[in-house]
Image (tube, rainbow, N blue to C red; front, side, top):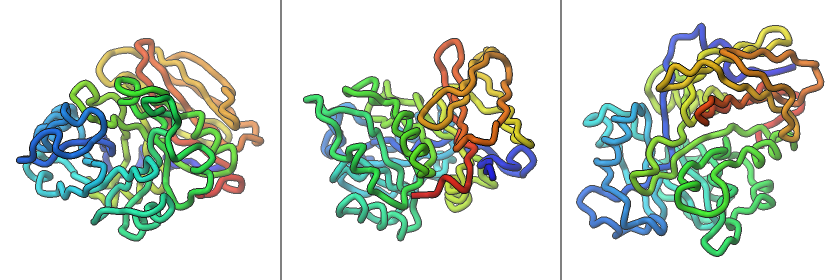
Length: 314
């Protein structure tokens, strides 16, 4: 039996929330560069300036995910009319986003994920395809992450990697490896903001009944979100054996979108171009996810429709 994570969305009262869960900034009043936020610490900005910039970019939800310390940002929510989510980027073995937590987390990777869950948060593995300055892979290798449990997703786009680091900010290959192995995890897109040219390059759009963390958390658990670098999901329906999807560009009238329906092993099952596209399931698919691309390179990734008998949460 196939499960559609967007079931009923277009007939349910709620709203799409634009969210970024991987943003670095130093506390207001602190000296820039005082806190270690990676190589680009000196270029990092104060929290209030960063929040204001993201609000101007149309964000509804933001998380300051610093490395090495916990920063309570709830006081900014009212001033900037934005839902602030507390969290960190766990980097002892690099790297896990701990979303919606109450205090700093340490320990081994699985301990960090378990602590995050106990605090009512969500754990997302971040930038699995980046490389260190010397070209070595992250400490949290592809083999290592296969042993982890109780996390909700993987960053399939970490846009800041392309501007500042080696390796790739795109990790859909890792996502497909997980899905093909029967592990149901959701795909996320984030900026990994360290400096101003990182802003608004990759984000998540979550359908929530209201702008509230618990409501949003429940939606994310169900997979009711998509990842984007510029496209907006306008239609996603699954009836019988037919999946219909439609998207357009956030800031331009581009209507001709290329849709790729991707299945087990990352194989493209079908590709077509138009305002919308339709895929007919044969019944043997383990999962089908959609990647949409516009002429100017803006992209969108849906969560998969999946066979609930063959995919389970890790």
